[in-house]
Image (cartoon, rainbow, N blue to C red; front, side, top):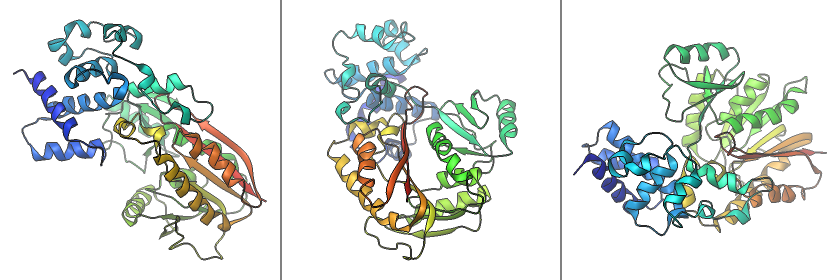
Length: 390
């Protein structure tokens, strides 16, 4: 048996075992750890086959799994494939062609309308076809260059021959598989942060810089602190409080803040769905950043297995969580203060419809809301709304 047939068989075994209960990357790591016979090139090829399978999802539902793995490789790759060259060389000859041209090979087997089967749930302003087709490609790795390190990071990448594209003065785009942590001081010199996550900062920037006195900021769903580091880089005079429900991820945040040189902040573990561990009633903030738990559907081009196993009714569960969180944080917003509502979702119920719900809170009005589409720039799709308390 050729190694390429072995790759196919191993990918089939993985897909048969994988049920979507953990990220595919975690499952693959455990799978390969349990069987040491696979070298790094083998692991990379097998992992790619699995990811290709989930990228095409239900658009190739009517062919067997081996045929689907080969067809998925054709649709998701755009340069010479050694696997296709050995198994389907006639397919490899058109690997650089359009999706339409590739689909002609399969007659009616490829149904692009099934790439994203939840179109009716999408936020306004999303080009449905472009968004669906974006699942066939892995988004880029984006770096946000921290103040004072813009030239240093670019020079280091040039020195080691890393290919990158300069998006603007502080953002670089690289191939997703690029390893840069040995050369770049992550969080000190540059932050790994999606382009549209960075653009959220640009939407917020005018409001964070307008005040002449220190601003009290509460990053209430802080996770590992990426948004907080970005806000600090916009205005290093902010007085920062961070919270999350997960002690382990706050531990990660503390490590990142140390590397980033951020000190003097406050942190706490809090469950904002139930209100347990919430701030004292007297604590108030000029800014509350609510990057709320959501479906994460705007990031699924990075993790296509999540789309494959997704159930539409899950959206309503996230909406209920979001409503509870916002209900618990608004009382801590000062008069004249701003609530920044953020998701990495493409679903209207989590985005525009949630803003409608927030506006039912007394004294809250909408300043701006924006959908940041990523399918046209190999990035995630995000939603941000800026609301003010009168």
